[in-house]
Image (cartoon, rainbow, N blue to C red; front, side):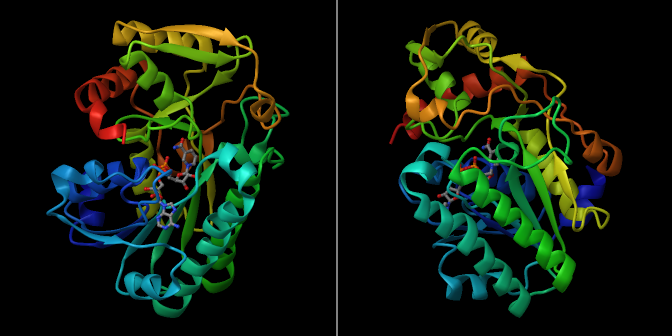
Length: 332
Ligand SMILES: NC(=O)c1ccc[n+]([C@@H]2O[C@H](COP(=O)([O-])OP(=O)(O)OC[C@H]3O[C@@H](n4cnc5c(N)ncnc54)[C@H](O)[C@@H]3O)[C@@H](O)[C@H]2O)c1
């Protein structure tokens, strides 16, 4: 913590997608650490941006409602920044199949555009990119480490992989320091729950908090490891300050592995309401499913000293309490 205060205090930090789930949680942490935070977010309705996510820090951050695809804004905004947490993205796998061009524009063209702005206007910046376990596709072995073959099952996975490699390329060729974190499923407060196209955990929580039925596809035995958002913010911050991390790719993950059925039961138990049912896989979702996944995160543990601190039960308690209190802020 002391190291992080020293590293980020009074530093200029740009967060793309800073009104979204991970970006806004990170903005809270950076404000606590004394950083000068600038956020850019497009607030496109279907995505995770929500003004309420920064309600309690809104006087302490600079907010720009804008799109990362707007090169002129980004040229201006990257100037003078010490760090860039590049968290803006189209996140829905299913939407990427229905509208591959938007995913390509935001997750690839938008990323190249940001990197070009950095190359021309701020080559000394340090960038952290949020990659995804989705790029591995259906695991050939478990737990999945960073040398596992990359074989995405959907358009979003291909574009995230391209975004990641553009960052590593700009690190290697132009010396613009960049690190990529391949995240597993992240959960916690401030996640978008107004529809269910952007990850299942937030949706399970919403259904339980509303006393409704959680629907699980197939037999519910699909296994996952999940990270609480505070632990993910730790990883982002630690990668940001580490010179060793430049040009590196790290898996995040968790030692606890849970089936979706057990996860639903745990959420229902913590919420004190809701129930669940198993239903047949919808065709469009089955086509892009990756089966069981959990990651090997020993590389980041050894090199940067990161490991998740929040166990699943506690993380879910915090999450359920948050949505019980603020549900109405996340339904519109
Ligand atoms: N949440 C997860 O489980 C997870 C797992 C792996 C990787 N990631 C990656 O982490 C990043 C953040 O994810 P999140 O869960 O916080 O999603 P989110 O949807 O909550 O946040 C993304 C933010 O980016 C903004 N945005 C989207 N397109 C934009 C554009 N063109 N210009 C400006 N802003 C734009 C959205 O408005 C939103 O606020 C994404 O790149 C995602 O792919 C997330």
